[in-house]
Image (tube, rainbow, N blue to C red; front, side, top):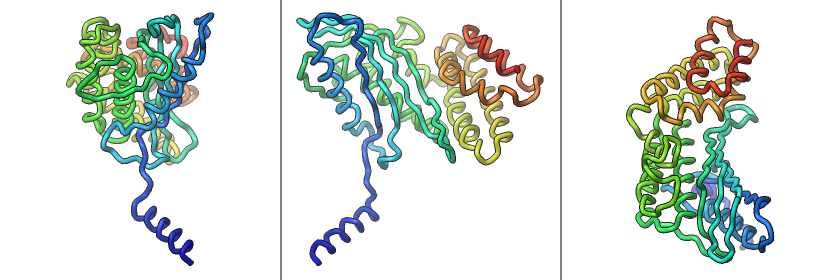
Length: 301
């Protein structure tokens, strides 16, 4: 009887106070094919340490249920490694996705290639992070991308819903200026970490933020109910992409969006709609990212 009462009490508590968990459900992969003749156990430890660091931490004050955690992946390619100093010269591919309502399909919400993902790590190092004291490039990198992933995901759920979290990513980028490592400097190039988060919060790029919501919630999430209406909403949302590109032509955000949504966009329009409706979309995508022209031509078919 005592066991029954305890079980019933626990079930009641779970009903009243549903289980809450961290924001991210991340996988970390370490590619060491370019590193020869060294003890690989340090990389196994790095993978375990980073996976725990990003997944076990509450990055915001927001409450997520276990099935709401944002799926994301950090694929780190180690190009050089010094066992003595622990210096790792790397590049990384960061991607996150969100489920599409009433379907088994997940759409890419963010995808970035960071060519300067460099840091120092010794086996058995413990990782700690404070927003107001950025003194380690590895934790700064993961904190920045954790906030960026969460902020962008929130933008896809409500209009500019990720503003507060994106500001935390900007704080990391600002505080990391003193680290003197590549990728943080304000004017290195338009697609470095500071440039990307600065553009997200730039008023002239507000159409891009609105695009994230309109494309996903009014477009993809509505596909199951009415695909024609949803496609029309996506077409309308792409006008915001064009507006953002016009407002700040040097921004990397419209180009990045066109790249990680490339196959999805082709699938949405290929064999559908009239040529007259699709030609402006083709022209816009060519203007934003001509390097993908072979894919944009498929939209017209």
